[in-house]
Length: 100
Image (cartoon, rainbow, N blue to C red):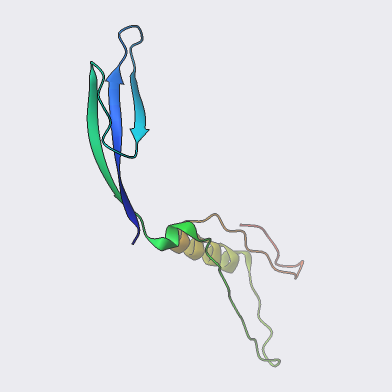
């Protein structure tokens, strides 16, 4: 898991009622009114790669599946819950097609 240490330097402006910050790679020299905050950050390698989702569905020729809108909703709900993504499920059969 790659990681790094940074310095977040915080200061409050006298003229403006907000907090300002700057980021430094090494421990910086402080100006009057600045407060250093050391940050150690570790992130998994997977953060830098896009997920590849694959699915393969094999249906025997003898079976004729009927994917109703309720089944589509169920599929989308499970995928959304497990992956944290918004999912649309459709079928090619116009009699039971709907978007979720």
